[in-house]
Length: 295
Image 1 (tube, helix red, strand yellow):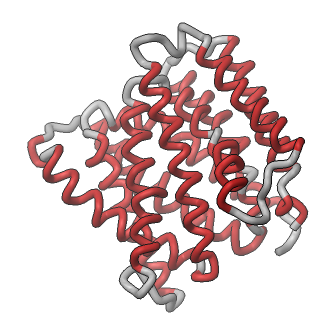
Image 2 (image 1 turned 120 degrees about the horizontal axis):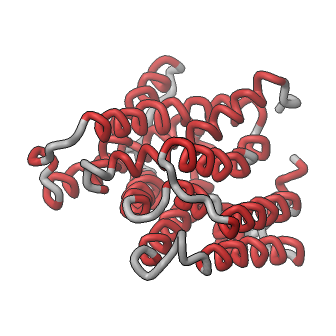
Image 3 (image 1 turned 90 degrees about the vertical axis):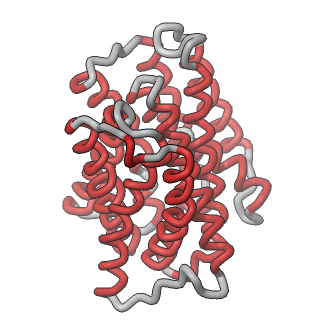
């Protein structure tokens, strides 16, 4: 893996901007679309460029190979469930709050990795980082302007969505030698298989009467925030490696707050800004003390 140049840094910032912008678009999309249908459309649009990429690079898509159970489980835990939970949570909380809560993924991932990955045990500094991070989240829950009795359940649902990302990430390690493009495409296909009947049975999307604004946001989520973003992620992973790519975790909540304040007119409190600083610091501590951070 090469040292990052200006273009690599630009792509990383662009990825952070795209993913950071996804939260206010999720909120706008939830005005008209129910969460399962929203998740379904996202992954359908995301799957198209991924399938084209695999065909172009002549990569075999192994979704229905002998490893199909693993691909389907990852598709459920890493895509279908978190996409639904994030849509449910974001519908009732500020979009920037969703971005901040989702940034806890490296923290929950560190805890789960301690129990399920042999070489990723929690050391003293990792433990400090995790405790600092969740103290930041707890501090955020004390802000009654942002989180109150009417929406705290939805904040917890968003954190649960973040946790499922961590679970999916750990499951993905079982087939890490199968290639990023194949794994992501195969798991996306399986997520569609799960979401399609759920959407049709539980939500009856053909009865919806969506606004143009919600539809445009949903198209953005599918084509840009999922499909294009994953292609950018592939490029960063292949050229600069996993450690460089994970630095996007610092950028997502910052862009989330920016878009929430300027485009959604959401109230940014001093507690939220302090919590953001605490959470970003905790992510730095955890990543600094990962064994893989030296690779």
